View (cartoon, rainbow, N blue to C red):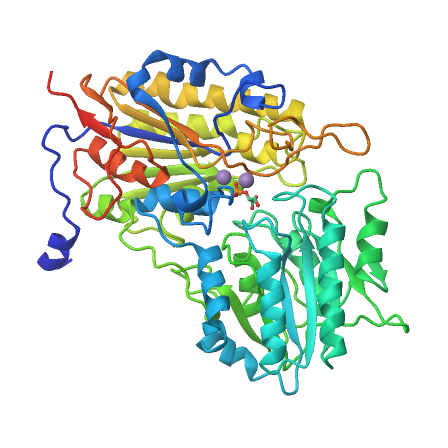
Length: 561
Ligand SMILES: O=C(O)[C@@H](CO)OP(=O)(O)O
Ligand SMILES: [Mn+2]
Ligand SMILES: [Mn+2]
């Protein structure tokens, strides 16, 4: 590192706060704040640790925004999610996120002028354009209206044969809504066919069982998708996608998230859209984590995660580039937000030693997303990232405690080792169990998360004279019911309350404390509208540094008396 580099990265000393205090940063995934209610699992669960943080010191507990424009999403009707949440937490600034960047590129038509589209367009003359992604209007990974525009635009820009391979959602949107989304899509495809474009659905499956795994938790998920999308092979074959989704949902245990893979076949039983040499492929999700594995399978010549059987010579582009370190995929339709100079990178340059940990399903959240969608270390000598393997093949409502205590134990050992200045964890339960829609299990999960917080912070931070920051990335478990405008739970045709499996628009708590925190430190009163992006500067302060001037302001002040 040259001296000019050093100057670029050097953080100013904080005028009042000391260096050398171990800082524990705990992110509770899917843990928002809402009024007491039977469908508020955090309220119903026994959560003495989080309760005591809230009640204990009013000047050290507050709410911050975790959704909408506060985290770079197109509007304040957009619920928060882990990608934008951890990006904001780690980067300390608000970036226009994938959802918004794609909206802009589609609205201006620039998407069709970029390198990525030109690259795939080469195939339109003789090959098929395949679009693979999540079919819903959830706005977390993808959006139906963006797919509709891309379909129309691709046809206008020369695509003559189009095949869609969709994943049903039921996680960011209500379970069962997949049928309506497929109907809308079929309608669009019919209109394209009337204009002479050979456009059809070719395959499908539920997002959690087909294709959209993340952080290499279970390659079988991606393989199931590959078999259907690329090879045209699946356990179920149907003549129409609407029929497929309706029939597969008839199984009483079926839900949109876990629908089995299927392919659409013609009257001779032949799959209508396997991917072959000369085709173009676009993965239309803008969000990174659950597309990286498929991107590797589509792009890497050397690949040993499963037997691809065929590796067609295609031109592949992602909606965005999903991994900034791996530069994956190498072609993309829209440039991702340029998240630079994250707090993790700054702290490494200022000799802060960091330990980060979660279980597989959230591991990349406190590493990859935290560091601005960049995999790997900034400096392996100063950082250690530990992944605890998640259970595979067991639904999280069956094991709602997940690995919360194991994560806490790793954090505890890391703090006690005194080898690290910052110990950062993500505790997954509120979110992962919340997404199952199982209220009872989510309550158990919230209790386990609360116990993990106690072990990680109250107990260990006390022992070493450290500081803690406990917060969350967005809401989920605090509201498990769909509601009408006045906030009453909606009741479905079956007479049951409609369950909300998705994230929410709720704010999240942030609590600070620990024996290492000067008693005169308190939350400022002058920034009411704070959000997740204000946390990075706060954490830098706790390490004894001022944040860079373009970071969102710190949440704290040091009182004079
Ligand atoms: O599971 C996921 O992919 C999303 C919801 O779609 O949740 P999170 O943002 O918490 O990772
Ligand atoms: Mn999350
Ligand atoms: Mn989630």
